Image (cartoon, rainbow, N blue to C red; front, side, top):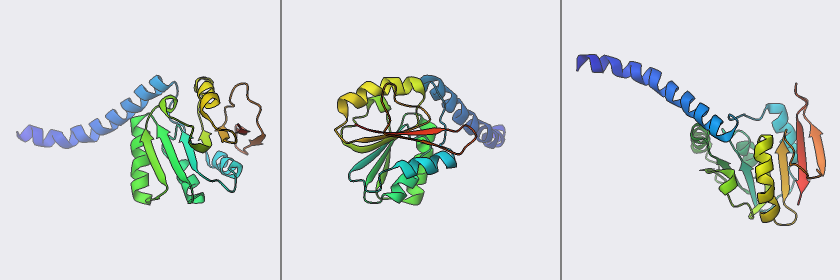
Length: 181
């Protein structure tokens, strides 16, 4: 019993980081990529690409840690902003941030973006790798209503002609693509 009392803090100290890092690795393998936060320069370009007057819902597909959905919710308090993330650790972090910041117009769901109905979106933002963009394309084409704005970070929607492309002033010269269905 005495040994268990001394081992518990050590197990917690080592176990929690081990669980978190293992979870991130497992979900990165499952999703084909790890959670990548949007850089500040990319975020600035993406936010400037959002329509100034949005009515309706803004979806962040693959919302990761919530670091893009949160400034979108702050910038557009009149809109419902919904982030979708399948990986449990980034989703948990985004939930904690939402509980801390308490934006009434922001929600996060732990859900695969390919299983998420998108027909209610007025704007969709996403930062997904090329294979995910390829899998997402048919869903967007079949579900989006006319006029829906789609903004992608770094990776274009294959075969779509962007309405606008902005190059971020970051070391990668990341591109932000804006489409209108």
